[in-house]
View 1 (cartoon, rainbow, N blue to C red):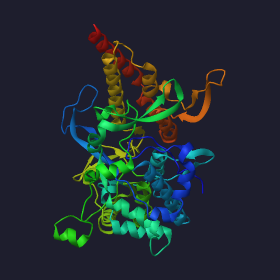
View 2: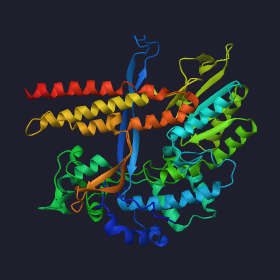
View 3: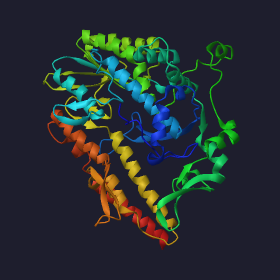
View 4: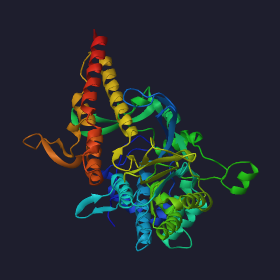
Length: 522
């Protein structure tokens, strides 16, 4: 067994961060001993809420000169993320490694072994290195449509509501035992399971307020940049933590002595007591731990088997990417499969289908032998709404990246320029510098190439030496890869043409930002 699971990360939590040089040896010995894990005292998770604005076109809104409808800001989408402490995170990673192997072993030679594609290392094959991503998985679905254009097709794209938050603990426990091929969970595995379903956490903002006067920061020794020391410091705002290089809120013992009142959990746990208190059945596991994604795939094993069996018997196609699934079938089987997935999701898996994100599309050859269609809604076909899956759009002829992806990219670009302008204006000596190199690297084709990082090295003639780390590119890198993969269907550079205006938009935002900075300085 390799040690790919043993990864060291730096983010503020309860307890000091671990380091590869100092802690690798004892960590491996501690984590690989099942008795240690069975008796391990987990630290509460750190809870953070991520919000994202959604822009949607108004129904029946007039179109502008470009043919686009007026958009409005809808309610923010909130995601609840939970971060384990550094030691707990590595423990989860190790057991995720174990369960992933058990999951893959269980699926070996199973006919439905390839339908679940998320959170797995699936080789691209055909003489190509690397593993498949959402690009290749989306391509496989579109390829099935392309190869079956002679049929009248229905495509059902469904989304499970709050997937991780609603996993049934009894089903999860049963499936966990199934992949391990045991009647009872070993004590170490049960400890992991129990800690996840209990979901004890601390809100990040509350933890910061409690310890902000003595946060643990990392600093270089005076006149010696080769060594670092940990110190205590007060930080006024939570968003200044990164700038101050805060590595921990407090020590582990310090937390349990001073802040146990901050621990949150949904009690009671027992079903009969919750019923008496008129509480909903306790469900879900925290999203954000290294083991959560693996458990989600294990949870859906029976669902994948049953749906795959039915689609195979009717010459249909099924793929599941986490909580997103797609079924491609004959139009005459549309109602059958729609009812099937609802039954399997709601009755057998004890989850819910998200109505707003569950759509049915129909495509077929018209009188001119053109393959056309769109979204079926209220018994009518809307050709303005085309198939969307895994970040791509398909209109029966071409595959494009969803416009939402570009909108998010442009919002991030503008926000980065605003941040640069803020620091330029607030500097002790006013400056018009925007750290352009960083911005070009993030938002233009100049930063789209995969490059090896060079690190400072006093012993090197150039002052730098190559590392084993890489810059993996940016959104443009993703678009170039998508264009390369989808070109087999598109036949041209459709996706590259989608970002032809990025360079000009970047420079318009840059120019406006410099004008804003200069006006403030003057």
